[in-house]
Length: 299
Image 1 (spheres, rainbow, N blue to C red):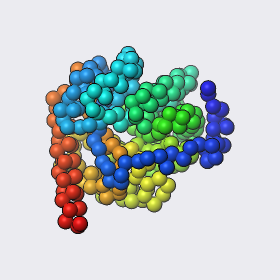
Image 2: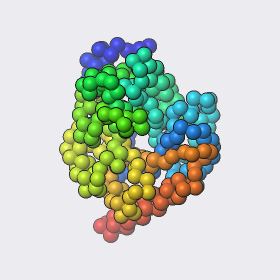
Image 3: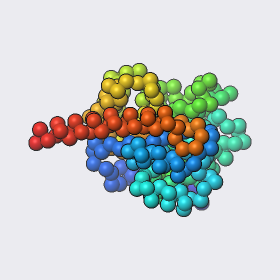
């Protein structure tokens, strides 16, 4: 049953369940997840095995590649490896589609909700894309209305929407949200309890800027527990900066999965990508180990 968007907008504060009171991991619980991004074919089993060998427990699944796999089998393949799904991605881009395809983009997102629930996945990553031929104001209105419609149904599955400002198609066009602060404003405009930001660390020039934004956001509604984080620097970032990002999140009591973005150039994970995952995991282990050692000394 589809909910009327106008009714949904009026009901956010009165009829929606208070998702903030759902059980959460303890503050400072930080896990790693490998994000799959690809337009080429890849084998789900090989990909999950490579991620597991890198010592990473979570995976962000690429929605278009799940269409040809029976949902029950996706669940079996993930669970038999003891892994978890942090998010399902590559949805949205509503304004990038032609006007007649906006409804199709919304349907794809709605169609992903049952699978997310089956996987125990609480997050759909929704790409905002660019303005295409529309004015920025009109483009944001189109995206806002679409996201509100999806959010209304998503709350029934216990799923949140993480708005992603980045989209490959939007790189050559005007983005809907050109900065993390603008992304925050769009979330506020949508005003749904299960809509939050997906922050890409590449949006910040320095680790100090990332730390400052987290501190600024912490004073507002939700705090760091209501954001998603994507590590998308690739090899263009030092070990020291990677450690700094982890320390920022731990210092802000972030709880949840931090997704490392990788690419797919064929079956499974290319060897270079596997090394990248191992690098992020190695630094993660060092930071977590240091934090535990510090906690023991304090006690």
